[in-house]
Amino acid sequence: MLIGEYIHTIDEKNRVSLPVKFRKEMGKKIIITPGLGQCLFIFTIKEWEKVSKKLSDADSNLSFLKADQRSFNRYMFGRAAEVDIDSIGRMLIPEFLQEGIRLRDKAAIIGVKDRVEVWNEKAWSEQKEKVAKEAEQLAEKLGNEK
Amino acid sequence: MLIGEYIHTIDEKNRVSLPVKFRKEMGKKIIITPGLGQCLFIFTIKEWEKVSKKLSDADSNLSFLKADQRSFNRYMFGRAAEVDIDSIGRMLIPEFLQEGIRLRDKAAIIGVKDRVEVWNEKAWSEQKEKVAKEAEQLAEKLGNEK
DNA sequence: TAATCAAGTGGGAAAAAGTGGGAAAAGTGT
DNA sequence: ACACTTTTCCCACTTTTTCCCACTTGATTA
Image (cartoon, rainbow over the protein chains, first blue to last red):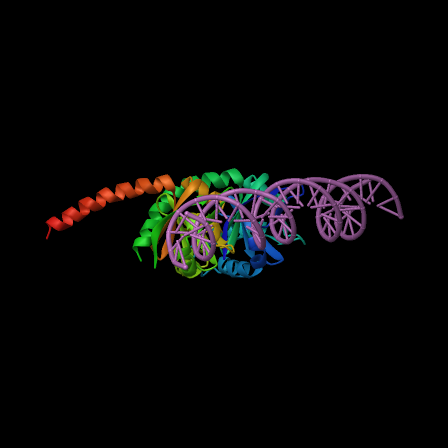
């Protein structure tokens, strides 16, 4: 399971180390897409197959209008990139994906169960702060449902 | 069953001894997450599997499409850590988890039935004091209702 | 009360992880 | 075909983490 938070450098050649704890699970090839919220998603090939299938399936539980569906898919597929992990565990993040989330210098790399997210470090700490309060209430609710 | 209170040092390398009484039950690998209130939760792997299942939406591979679910999963999984217990029974608490509860110097380690909690020592003694009063009132109330 | 043992604490050395950069390879345009 | 840029691959340095050993403290018992 992919969990935890890591702050890594994005260097001049657009490379970022994938945290060691994620490497085994992610394999040698990954898919990077624009995420929802100010981040990127990273999927394993396997996970991406599941996700992309669902996304492109018009009858899925997504109640999108066809036009919306199309443009949403265009967005996800059009910007998705297949990326190799180099011999020492770094991935190369295409510049067109960096722009969207203002990535530079330091990136926060977050494990979220079966995907990885990449954030601008600052945006991540703001996100955390924002969610902290809501999360506690939500968690309490979940806890009570036991 | 995990019970009792222990005050241990958190050293410069972010290590804390797990009380001997907890070691057998916790095993060699644990999961640390932000808790409810000013503390961290420590789960056994087994317990975490239960908890994480409940947290994630079991019916949908696309739980990331829902904004609330997304932020909540991010918060819980992103701030969870799988941690090894070293050969003499210490665990390493990631700094990003320490920040949230202002952990430093002395930590209170509390057994709470099937999980362990970690508190800033001071926060814990305040918490105790607060609960003690409430408990007294509650007991009195219960007594009167007889 | 000294010796012994168990639990907890601290720190040095080795190993691993992360970062940076040079050189070879591939791609592009003239 | 050549010069020039971009990408890829690999090596080397630095920092962090892990592993292991040893000391301290406090309880136990002979």
